Amino acid sequence: MTPHRLLLLLAAPALVTTLGAQTPKTEDAVSFLKEAVVFYKTHGRAAALREFTLPTGKFRRFGGELYITVYDIDGKCLAHGQEPGKVGINALHSKDPDGKEIIKDRIDLAKAHGKGWQDVKYKNPKTGHPQPKAMYYEMHEGLVFATGIYKG
Image 1 (cartoon, one colour):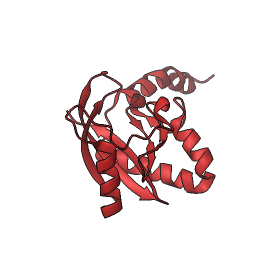
Image 2: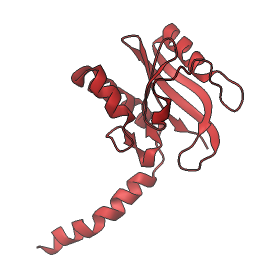
Image 3: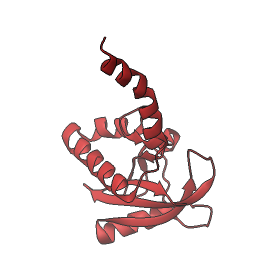
Image 4: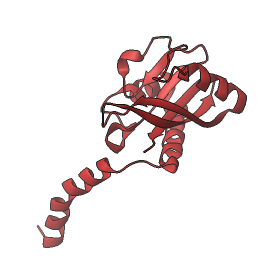
């Protein structure tokens, strides 16, 4: 093995750790969601929803901070990359710690605008505590796809 190759092998774990520790930015969230929509259109609804919900799937990034959720327009959770137990549950009237009906609001925004940003408060998987989060959403085939980044 060449010294260069050995150096790459030794540096890889540090690089992975560093990438996992980074904080996603707005452009990361937008491109991540667009990648999920392409996957949905390419692989079909059932395969995509399954993949989005896998805790170790390809749609979890930045140490689990970026993940995909999908809701139908009635508020039923079809995929949730952070909390798979929510799949199948109607969350239309679920509230964040401030009492905001976040799913209903997101669906209403998606119906009105097709895509955009929504401010919510949600539990950060890295800290375990609720904190402000900006959710990027897009409506496709009557479903609301979303991902988000934590603020501060």
